[in-house]
Image (cartoon, rainbow, N blue to C red; front, top):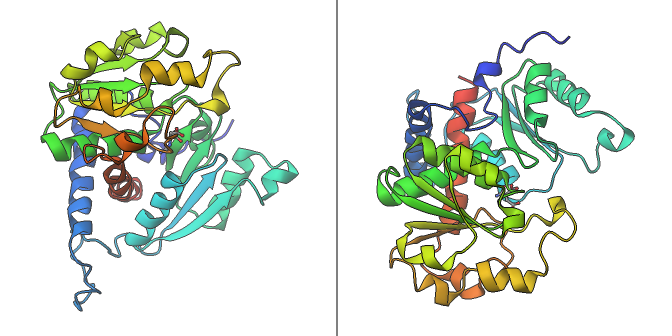
Length: 324
Ligand code: NCD
C-alpha cells in the first residue's frame, strides 16, 4: 500500500462536493488574475516587475523555484497550453510530458511516470488521462498535489471553474441563472463538472440531448433533463454547446451527425430565439457545422475565447493554491 499523500488536500480532482466558499475563493482569486492580465504588463510599460507577496499581477514570481509537471495522456490544445502559461506567469518552471514520444510507449505505467517526474523535481502534477479516476490514483500514489486536467468522462475541474468565472464576469452572480448544456452529456466530463459547480452556486441547469446521450442518472445530480432544445431557447441565460466525444462514443449511439445537428445544433435561427444577451459557450474544440454553426460560433454573443483566456487565470489561481 502506498503511504497516503500528505498533499492530497491540495489536490483538485473534481468540483463535486467542493463547498461554495471554496469555489468562490478560487473564482475571486482567478478574477484578480484575469483583471491583472488586462493591464499592460510591467515590462511593456517599462516598470519594475517587483511584486508584493499575494498581489495578483499579470506576471509574478509567486511560484519561483517551483516546477509544474504537465502529464498529458490525451490530446489537448487549450488546457495544456494554458496550464503552461499560467505556471510561467507565476514564475514556475514547467515540465511537459506527453505520452507520445515518452517511455509510456515502452510500457511505463502512469504511476511510475508520475513518480519519475516527482523525483526529477515536479512540485505539482497536472494530469490528463482517458481513464476516469486516473488523477485520483496519482494523488494517492505520489506525494505531490495533483490537478485533474480531465479524466475520461469523469471530471475537468479547471474547465468548470473557467466556465463559472466567465458567467460571473457577465452576471456578477450565477445564482438563479438558467444554463442549458447541450449535446453529448453522457461522455462529457465538462457537462458533469459544470453541473456540479453551477448547482453548488445556486444556478438552474438543464441538460439537453438525445436519449442515448442523456443518462437519466443526471437528474439525481440536480439537473433537469430535456430531449428537446427548441422550447428552452427563450428562457435560458447561457447555452453551452458540447462536441460529440467520438473517441468515447459507443457504436450507433446517434443515427447520423446530420440528424443530430438538425435537432441540437446551435444555428443562427436558434440563437436568435434566445434572449438577446444570452451567453454562448463552448469548451472547445468546436466542430463547426455539427454542434454549432459557423455564424453562431463567431457571433458577438459567443464568449468562447473569453473562456479560453479565463482558463489561464483559473489555472494560476489553482496552481498558487495547490503550492501554497
Ligand atoms: C474538453 C475536454 O477535453 O474535456 N476540452 C477542453 O478541455 N477544453 C472538451 C472536449 O474535448 O470536447
